[in-house]
Image 1 (tube, rainbow, N blue to C red):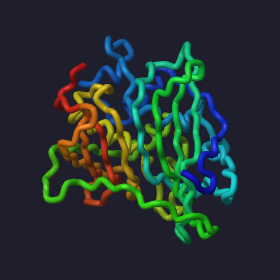
Image 2: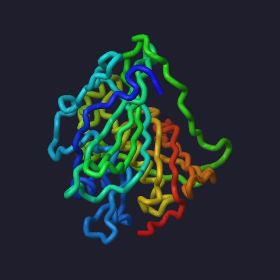
Image 3: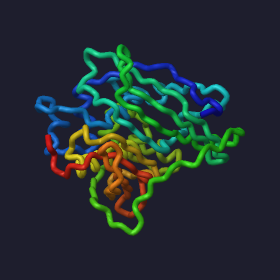
Length: 308
């Protein structure tokens, strides 16, 4: 792979978490009392919800509220323009689970390693920066999670860069009803709770921030919907056992306004990879607007009831 900025590594950053962080995350994405192994630290099978690593690039080692924009490092990528991090939206996120995180980082040293996979000029609409992030044990070099994501820098294109490759799509099976449907009712407080995980973007708390960029007010974190859908799939098909989720990905299709109902439709494909079945999904709001597309997970299907 070659191209402008490709392979550039950002400075490594320490990450850490406590049991309280893990409990808050599980609560904020919709885990329920029949899943106490995610919600109660004294449960004999207390575990980290598997997508928790996705929040660590925001949280790093912080335990206190931070100014989102001041804390955001706008690292320059050689050979491409310096983009404005205040005008960036999530494009797509994928996580590959290599090894389950311990319920606390205490006694270990972890770091975030990030590198550029591609920088693409989409013309007037903006530019896309695709990165890979890894959560790594600093002392052993063991990788716990690999995360691939893209950021869309609104209105920051037309600089003469490559247009980029076509993305692989995972649409739902044509003409087939979902094998399962999961509903989640958001409230005005949904983004206010989720942001306490470490993603303090004012867009998800202050109406004036959303009004400035055309959303009309507060919107819910795209990663809330993304994590909520991961929970829906793991609970529905994987028995709420984190070992039964190998990969998870989705594209952010449209913003979510607090108070809407989110409906995740899921299809089993029958395609197996090392014993994990491909499940495709779409998340819509109660008006039928798709908010998460290109949804794909690899799940060891065991049924809906928690086995833990």
